[in-house]
Length: 454
Ligand code: NAP
Image (cartoon, rainbow, N blue to C red; front, side, top):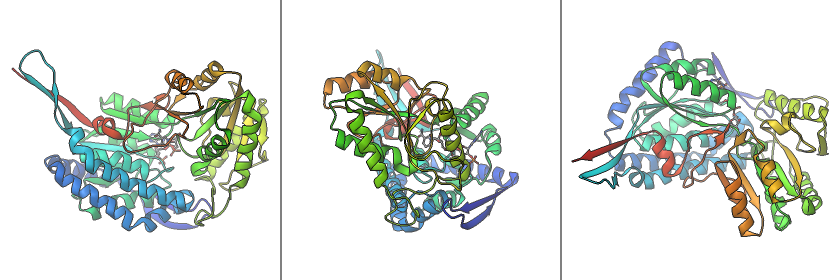
């Protein structure tokens, strides 16, 4: 199998990589397992020193790594730079906090003494997506390595150079060889790696079909799995919100990464008294964004990451409009050319329409207009997904009531949803299970062992 680095913006091919043979995959798994035997014995102080060096490596090579992101998956360069800086922050966060998170915890037992220990599981396989090709990997790898695990990475096929560069970061930071190992393999080879007795656990960030496949294989071999899947996050706007600020943030929340974020606001649920004002401001916000070459500093958005992804968004919009959805803003294309897709607003969405039922991974905002808080909650929860949500209101009691009623992993009030190393991240329903980041994230790939001494 061959992996190609190609810009989705202009098709420039900047690298071709031969995939690993079955023998090479087996050798790498063995080497990663052998390194685990050594790495799990290292003390947390040593691990923290190396993790801080990884942060330094990222910052020192920010230009090279951010350009690699933009060249392979097409996000605008300033977002790629921010992604590398955030990776450095997560390394520093776990370097600073892992010892505290992994310390033994006393248990209040009725006799003797008991405590909980956190010990590493072993080799953890990460199957990762292209949309934040550095961040998704670092938010898994920093806690997993700090906990004493070793890591295998199967990255998305369109970001092979990012995958190799991530391994370079850990190597240059001084981590032992094969503490972090990249496998250049296709998705059809993932099952064999999960089945391998030397692999202890698997984490996937990706789509629902990939999640279903990986969880079923992990289940068959009785291995721990974490799934970070898609989302169709609601962005609820109540009539008492500051509409100017809300609309400005709403545009950002939908258009970040050209709409290709699991926690992008995708369904805008707006109380009717402010529907007109919000729609006008949102539309003006979209019109002000500059489309262009992702390598240019003043581009706000560029193409989607692949032509097939643009085609998928096109089909979702087309089928929804054929079924009665209305275009509030944007051009209803006849067909797709290249990887571009223009920003759009759809409304009059109903069950049975792809834009209502599915995750739309591109710059399409779905607008729903509601009478009251109860209807807003009902529309928000009418989704197969449950990742994040954003609620906008000046009424604290209403914000709390809505936050408690929403079926999702996180609710952000008067701010857009975003991830932060200190805050747990993950979903329910078809958005997956398990959590990343914070203390909760580092505990996912540990054996939480009880010791009770009489
Ligand atoms: P994807 O097609 O599921 O791919 C993700 C990874 O899974 C890639 O490495 C892919 O390999 C592999 N893969 C695909 N199908 C597989 C299968 N049947 N069995 C085993 N592995 C498989 O997803 P994507 O298009 O790259 O990413 C977009 C999706 O990720 C969206 O749904 C988005 O919401 C979700 N996402 C979720 C989060 C979160 O934290 N919840 C964060 C970011 C993205 P190949 O590239 O070789 O196919």
